[in-house]
Length: 88
Image (tube, rainbow, N blue to C red):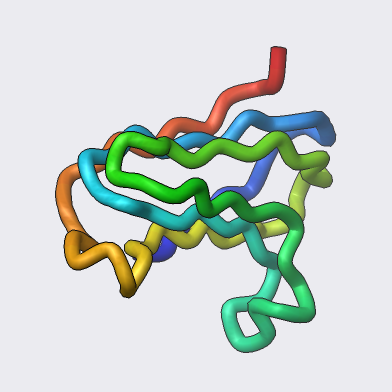
Protein backbone atom coordinates (compact mmCIF):
# COMPACT_ATOMS: atom_id res chain seq x y z
CA UNK A 1 0.00 0.00 0.00
CA UNK A 2 1.10 3.56 -0.66
CA UNK A 3 0.36 6.61 1.48
CA UNK A 4 1.01 10.25 0.56
CA UNK A 5 2.42 12.47 3.30
CA UNK A 6 3.19 16.18 3.01
CA UNK A 7 4.87 17.54 6.14
CA UNK A 8 3.90 20.97 7.40
CA UNK A 9 7.38 21.55 8.85
CA UNK A 10 10.89 20.71 7.67
CA UNK A 11 12.21 18.26 10.24
CA UNK A 12 13.34 14.72 10.95
CA UNK A 13 10.40 12.31 11.04
CA UNK A 14 10.17 8.81 12.50
CA UNK A 15 8.15 6.62 10.14
CA UNK A 16 7.38 3.13 11.43
CA UNK A 17 5.18 0.11 10.85
CA UNK A 18 4.17 -2.50 13.40
CA UNK A 19 3.20 -5.73 11.59
CA UNK A 20 2.62 -9.42 12.12
CA UNK A 21 4.34 -10.36 8.84
CA UNK A 22 7.74 -9.81 7.17
CA UNK A 23 7.31 -6.29 5.83
CA UNK A 24 9.21 -3.61 3.91
CA UNK A 25 9.03 0.15 4.41
CA UNK A 26 10.17 2.75 1.87
CA UNK A 27 9.83 6.54 1.58
CA UNK A 28 10.11 8.00 -1.94
CA UNK A 29 9.27 11.23 -3.74
CA UNK A 30 8.23 9.65 -7.07
CA UNK A 31 6.38 6.34 -7.33
CA UNK A 32 7.41 6.15 -11.01
CA UNK A 33 11.11 6.16 -10.03
CA UNK A 34 11.30 4.42 -6.67
CA UNK A 35 14.98 3.51 -6.97
CA UNK A 36 16.00 7.01 -8.04
CA UNK A 37 13.94 8.92 -5.46
CA UNK A 38 14.19 6.72 -2.37
CA UNK A 39 14.63 8.91 0.72
CA UNK A 40 14.75 6.05 3.24
CA UNK A 41 13.97 2.36 3.55
CA UNK A 42 14.06 -0.57 5.94
CA UNK A 43 13.65 -4.32 5.50
CA UNK A 44 14.47 -6.37 8.57
CA UNK A 45 14.17 -10.12 8.21
CA UNK A 46 11.42 -11.95 10.10
CA UNK A 47 7.76 -11.63 10.91
CA UNK A 48 8.47 -9.95 14.24
CA UNK A 49 11.00 -7.47 12.77
CA UNK A 50 9.11 -4.20 12.49
CA UNK A 51 10.43 -1.55 10.13
CA UNK A 52 11.27 2.06 10.97
CA UNK A 53 13.24 4.92 9.45
CA UNK A 54 14.19 8.46 10.42
CA UNK A 55 14.11 10.75 7.40
CA UNK A 56 14.77 14.46 6.96
CA UNK A 57 11.66 15.72 5.15
CA UNK A 58 11.06 19.14 3.61
CA UNK A 59 7.86 21.07 4.30
CA UNK A 60 5.44 21.17 1.38
CA UNK A 61 7.05 18.23 -0.44
CA UNK A 62 4.85 15.18 -0.96
CA UNK A 63 6.46 11.91 0.08
CA UNK A 64 5.07 8.45 -0.61
CA UNK A 65 5.33 5.85 2.15
CA UNK A 66 5.28 2.34 0.72
CA UNK A 67 4.33 -0.62 2.94
CA UNK A 68 4.96 -3.99 1.33
CA UNK A 69 5.66 -7.62 2.20
CA UNK A 70 8.82 -9.61 1.58
CA UNK A 71 8.14 -12.18 -1.18
CA UNK A 72 10.32 -15.00 0.16
CA UNK A 73 8.78 -15.15 3.63
CA UNK A 74 5.52 -16.85 2.62
CA UNK A 75 3.52 -14.37 4.73
CA UNK A 76 3.44 -11.13 2.75
CA UNK A 77 0.25 -9.46 3.97
CA UNK A 78 -1.62 -8.73 7.15
CA UNK A 79 -2.70 -6.05 9.54
CA UNK A 80 -0.28 -3.27 10.41
CA UNK A 81 -0.10 0.11 12.07
CA UNK A 82 1.71 2.95 10.31
CA UNK A 83 2.91 5.92 12.36
CA UNK A 84 4.57 9.15 11.28
CA UNK A 85 5.82 11.41 14.05
CA UNK A 86 8.50 14.00 14.60
CA UNK A 87 11.70 12.16 15.48
CA UNK A 88 12.69 12.39 19.14
